[in-house]
Image (tube, rainbow, N blue to C red; front, side, top):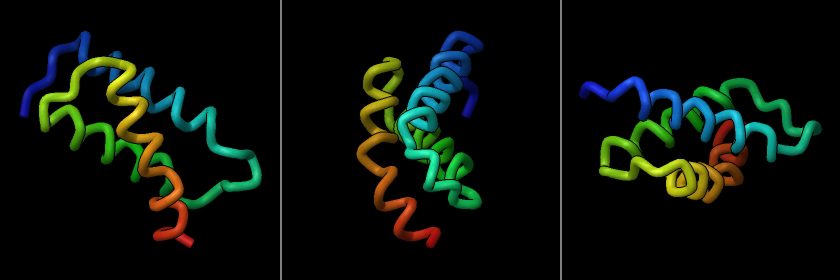
Length: 69
């Protein structure tokens, strides 16, 4: 799937925002990649707003951490 450069920038910003909200004591290997994948999936399903992407990924962070630990 092709994404516009604007959407790619929005996805990057969403990723950085979500990762900044993860407590420093949760340095789980692979977490950033898994959160990025979550954001990509949300975008593929039509979610293109910054707030929507952040919300989609934030909702999954605890589940991702649990899965990776």
